[in-house]
Image (tube, rainbow, N blue to C red; front, side, top):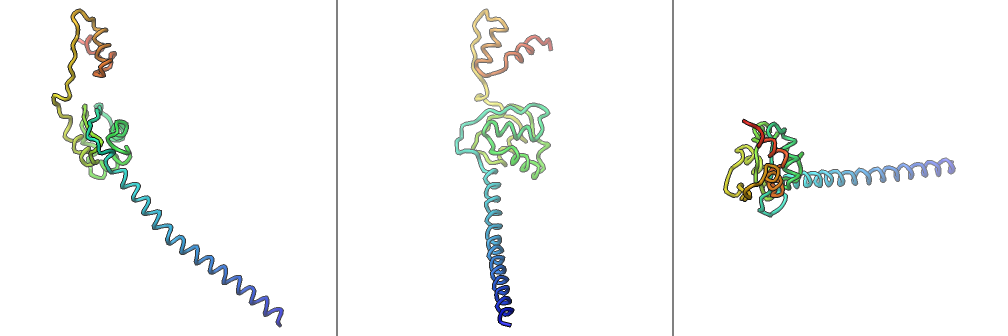
Length: 168
């Protein structure tokens, strides 16, 4: 009997050890899951914060017919929002995705997603800061003017040439 009894005790110890290991794993999971959820929430929250504290405006052009994802991408590329996806989620959550207006905007990276969204709903605001001073020397051809405007970053030379030749 003692051989059988020793064998049973050994099996009981192994079962107890396995149960302890399982309890340790459960405790680890109970700590890890909330920690991962917290980290994920903090990351998602950071996507909705302003990009920078800088108030230097950035130029953003939203073409007519651009969808909300295209708008978000343009804003992210210009450094106005952190993530195009966060902008899309925010706009859709607030039901404003279809109300964004096309145009040229001057937006800074210190704006919240809500402020950016409201600016795009109102539409572009024209001011003296949006105007550029250009002196076109007498005798310049259309090509020279197009080149000058392109160098100043005002317009694309091919677009200028197309519009300059359009009778309408």
